[in-house]
Image (cartoon, rainbow, N blue to C red; front, side, top):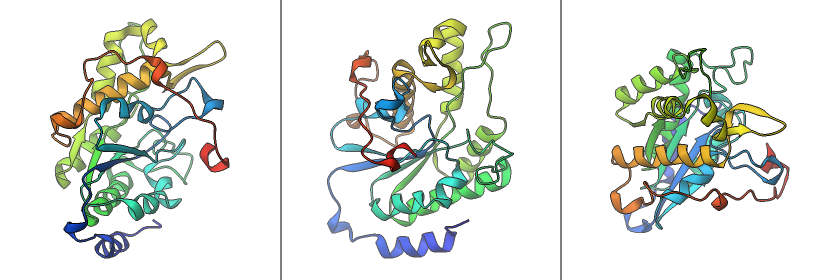
Length: 262
């Protein structure tokens, strides 16, 4: 691993400012993969749920979406992306971590992690990094893909990764947002045909992993509700949890440089 636990802890002790310097607002950082990531105009209508999360948060809680397409809990760290978050995170901020889609790719040693060993090891680095800076880590089980059996039953696709994250959250006393279970139940309620509206199904693509605007909004709503349920956020920090959110609120900015598309 490019970032050891000792390095995280030592750097964090040097970085935490005195409490007198705390600012009134706080930032929710997202570390994750393409299901959460910011998409740009060339990728529309594909939409990460992190793009819709701000619709449910009141002023005073800002979202810093660092999720990137194709990353696993391992590759995100190996590329220095956790270090980048930790260089800016402050006491009172939140670090929401959702990985597994790419950790599952056993043929790719740059991304693969084993659920009960290396996956948990890498997740601990996020937890320890956030805590070392006075921020609060939050784990989110991976959102489910769109997959049904012949009888129309929504199927789990993430193997042992959600269970491994749940176990780690209990062990480390970290708030857990069980987005895997909640999204699976949502896809079951919507059914085989209606879920196509939520995923990136277009005239040219049938994508059962990534979302269209309705899906991103629906998953962001699940995340916001879980942040409230677990008391990570207070009632005064969330809103619109029962409101219809217009898909027109989703916008895809132009990429400003090549790094935006990585």
